[in-house]
Length: 250
Image (cartoon, rainbow, N blue to C red):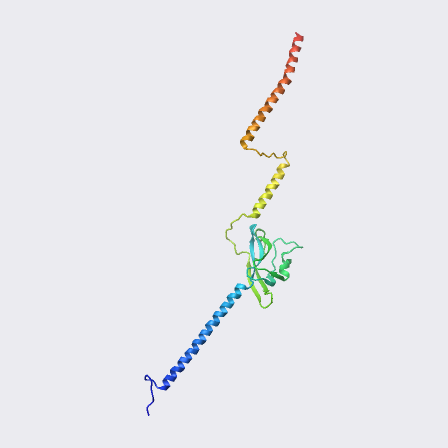
């Protein structure tokens, strides 16, 4: 008994091909679903990263001077961070601490900050590197920051290393800004006050330089002429008296 064929293949062959095609379709669909799911998760993660709070803690040089360092807490994310707590180990200590006002007593390091808005920064003066270099205080600290969303649906715990010697050996450029301009004005004010105590009231000229020079020249000539006339009046009687005395003696 002969088996029917189609295009040279028996029914069993076509059945095998159909099964293979069906399996390939299932695999293709599974791959498509996997890729779609992966893209969805990537898009979801990207959206979360773009819309989440992101609080960082670091040591930064103060705008007033590069050798003065601040501890800066900044939310660089796009949404507010809630219930922000910060731990720094070892405990940060200034080179010149005051018993009643130590750096470790700062509220932001001991209490939970209710909310830090996007782009907001909290800046605390920490230390002078000129003073700190003569101490054995640590230059590296471990910072742990914890914060959450407003509805507390997600919480982040992030760690970082704060390195005060990060710029060790690098050259620094001094940028003069508003702080330096204000300081220069204060110094100028002190100098003027000091000098004004030594001299008469300061004369302010409100006329053109050429006119001022010409006016002073004329005033000088007038004073000189008056002095000359006064001297002549004082000298003339004395000369006359001297001549009279000479005549009497003769």
